[in-house]
Amino acid sequence: MIEKITHIGIAVNNIDDQLKIYRDIMGMKVGERVKSPYRGVEVVFIETGDTKLELLQPLDENSNLNKFLQKKGQGIHHICLEVDNIEAALKEYESKGIQLIDKTARPGASGELVAFLHPKSTGGVLIELEQKKE
Ligand code: CO
Image 1: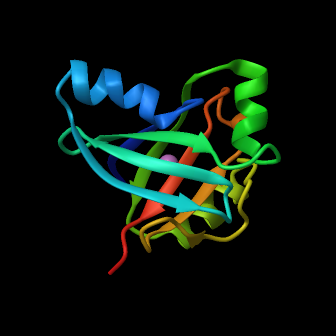
Image 2: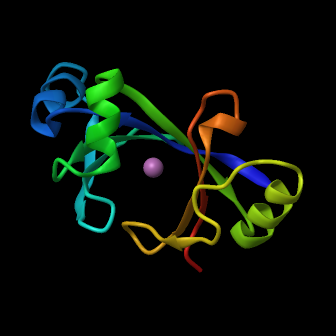
């Protein structure tokens, strides 16, 4: 079951440049900032109530995020939906024809479980599923 949109992921060339907009001009609160070498990204969360903004900056040229930026430029990258049981959701969606990027959930930046659905089978939207850590 889908609980809510936890965050909207935004691909950026440089997090500090974007903080000048979200933090300095718009006055939004900046949350935790983490590097995820496994995914090749640095991430910072902007606190916006229940649904956060996740700014994503590539850590290296080979990351998928860098390829995304080269192709499409900066902008909305994915939406993240919270589910109560991520493995059950993946199994169900796959059986109903959704193409999975991650066949099984893996640990996200803050210990939650995450998996991505392929935009080819979701109308062009990269969807991240997330199950909160217990
Ligand atoms: Co995300």
